[in-house]
Image 1 (tube, rainbow, N blue to C red):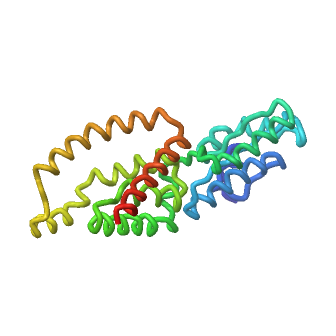
Image 2: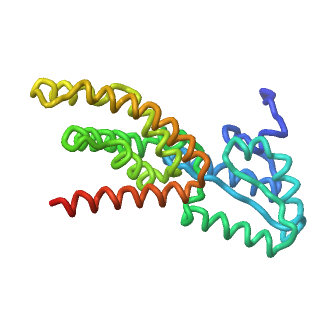
Image 3: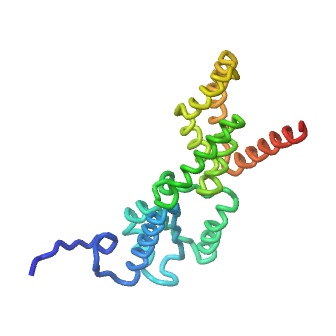
Amino acid sequence: MARQDVSLNDRFDLTRTPVLLNGTQALVRLMLAQAARDREAGLNTGGYVTGYRGSPLGAVDIQMRRARQWLDAAGVVFQEGLNEDLAATAIWGTQQAELRGEATPKSGDETTGETTWYILLGVGLGAGVLAGMFGIGGGVVIVPALVTLLRFDQKQAVGTSLAALLLPVSLPAVIEYANSQLLEIPVAVCVALGLLVGAFVGARIALGLSSTTVKRLYGLFLLFVGLRFILQL
């Protein structure tokens, strides 16, 4: 019989099976397995485990602390509670965070899943069409799409949108407008210079505010712009 290499860490290594573990260790592996399943499904999720030490099931906190490096890598947070009431309140808070716009997903996870690449491509395609038609794109199309469809944090969506716009993505549309003699290059250059400085100042301001505040200010901006266009019709 061939001798297999066995380590105590195998119990938390999802690539190893079968493994020998007890009930509390199985709870740790369950959290890791769920995180892995979410990533495979293209979901960007996080886990949160808390409770009073030793209650209701003894040694869970010990196993969670021992497996911290595995849990951290999977986006699972373990935090001991001073008592059952505070632990339950903490769990409730994690479920309410998304409603208040305070949930901050780990960047990059959701953009690698098989179920989301076509969403990103569709967002870019839609933003490109609207940019060519109306001169809009990043703030009006890409940011809301990332927040709504992929559950990005507001500031994370803004940063991602700006990164996408760094590339000369509108160059083909600019050439079309130039060929139709509908482009004022000196004006565009002046606006671009102001945009360069303004984007830096705006980013510094936004990063100093909460995501909820940024989202509300952004909504007010869209409402103002929409009303202006509607009332001018």
